[in-house]
Image (tube, rainbow, N blue to C red; front, side, top):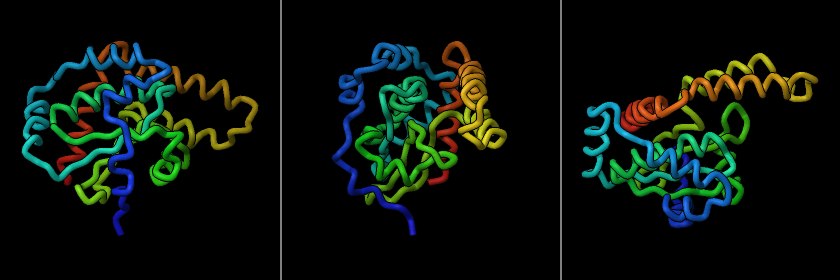
Length: 188
């Protein structure tokens, strides 16, 4: 049976309310939002073509303290605006029930972008980060399963640095996110 999150419709924030309510990282978030530009016009045309569809909804699990939210959600917002898909943001700390249905490698990681139909049935989800960045964390977790190990903190600091480098200095990951979302939505 498909998971249903319709009970969360109307409980989230609009993207603008989320940004205006940020108490951490608001300036960085808005900067990434402003820097977004379509690198691939075919991707842009694809998302523009979704404006005729009224059967999709999006819930985004997010927290303003999270670096991946600050890097990725502005891009997701811009893409979903282009697509005209109704979007709500659920604050992680207030929506643990939903978060626990979308764990990443057994842990809570945001953002999670949940695509549903109008009845709230989950069609798919994306997140918390582009695959080329997430693969670094997946490898780290596989090689370092013991969070209590004496060198765990130093090793996770190293992988976080590598993940930052994988994102790139500028907007390189924006086109990657667009392609990953396009691939996901194309399956609905």
